[in-house]
Image (cartoon, rainbow, N blue to C red; front, top):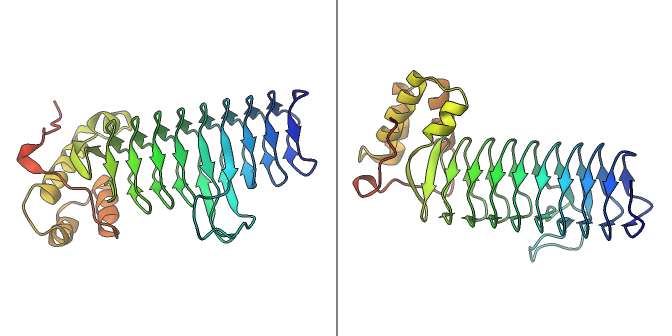
Length: 265
C-alpha cells in the first residue's frame, strides 16, 4: 500500500508488498525489497539497494550524500540487508566515491536519532541505542551493542560481541568481547554477551586469561600479542588476537587497577 501523499520517482524499484506512509519521498536509484515498511516523512535517496523486511520509522533519511568535502556529487552507493529496524530520525549516508559502498547487514536495530556515516561497514545483529554517532569508514562487527550517545571516530573498528557503555567515545579500535567505558578505555570482558552467544565456561576462562595477558601484564603490547599467539589457541582467542594484530589506529586500553574489574561470577 502506498499513501496518496507519498512521492515516488518512476525509476525507483519497489516490491509490490512494500508499504509507504504519508509524505515519504523515494528517489530514482532506490530499490526496496519485499515487505519493507517506509514510515511517514521518510526520505530514501541515492543509489540505495535495500533488502527485505526493513522498517523505517518517521523522519529517517537513508542514502543521502556523504558529509565529506571530497564528495563530488556523484551517484554513490548504499547497501542494506534484511530485517533491520531504523527508528525515528535515523540517518545513513552513502559512500563518498562510486567505487565504495556504505554497507549495513541484517537483523540490526537502530534506535532514534543515530547516524551511520559514509563508507561504514556494519555486520549483523547489532544494536545501536539512541543518539549513537558513527563517523565515516567505521567498521562494526556482528552482535556489538552500542549504548546511548556513544561517539565513534572515523576509521575505528568495533569488534564482535563488544559493548559500549552509555556516553563512551572511542577513536581507537575496540577489541572483540570487551566493554568500552569513558574515552578509549575498556574495563573487562562482556561475559553476559559471551554466555548468550554460547561460549562455554572453559572458553570464557581462556578469554579472561588472554585479556589479562594482553591488557594487564605490563608487557609491551606488540610483544604481548606475539607471545599470546603461541599461548592461547582457542577460536575465540584467535578472533581477538587477529583483530588487535591488525589494528592501525591503536587499541583501547585498560587502565588496570584503577578500573572496576568486570570479573565473571
